[in-house]
Image (cartoon, rainbow, N blue to C red; front, side, top):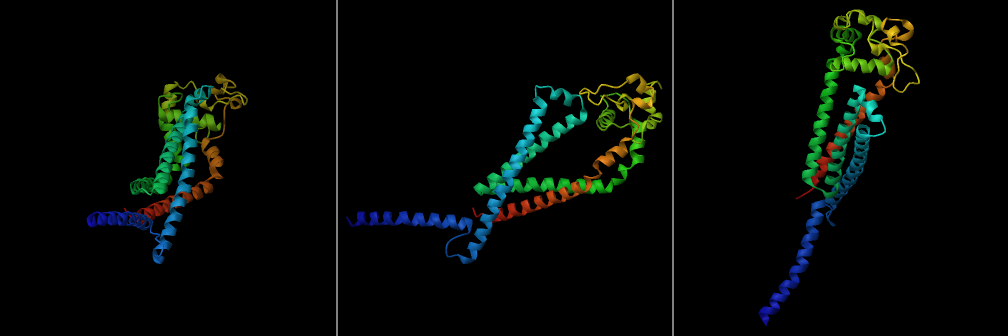
Length: 289
């Protein structure tokens, strides 16, 4: 009888001890146990970081989902927009960039949200490494852009155009890109139509019969398909039927107002990524397994 009573008493004590241990373990894991005044403040900071990380990554998740949806819609839309995109290499590239950026942000937001809510060290570590790789890639791109900024001069583009341009050859990436740029911005060459007088490959392929490529020709303003005003007159170099302005000036004027905005945006993105890495690592270190 005494032995049985002792076992019952021991079992009665074991339950509360386990519950207490569980509560202690839970609060110790979050570093916010009542009575631990020095640790409570740290636990509150970690909780704040946790919810900030969740909200921040939730918006990244939504943004990635939107970009992914737009990219998929552009590629599979049955209403005819796909044909317009397929006819323009720049638009095709843009659609693939949307898909890649959307997928990357979608995955990044998912890792950040799940890692913050579940306090999962593995997900937080993946999130940190993911952000670190993107951060280093962007920083490297900025450094390379600064180093090779001399290659963005008018002389450099003129030299490359006259050396490599092949006309309406869509199989050549360089020529197809230039054609897309000239059609999109309504311009011709780097400095103007006179650039093609010195385009050796273009002159050879056209047997000197065309003064300018078809991409330089003016199009009907209201035409969805870009119908030329007069292909024959344009290829003969008639001023009324071709775009006279060079692409370098047109593109520079188009993007000049956005240079400072793009710079500020790039700095802001790098700062956000830096803070995201700090938050992720602080939360990672604050979780005790």
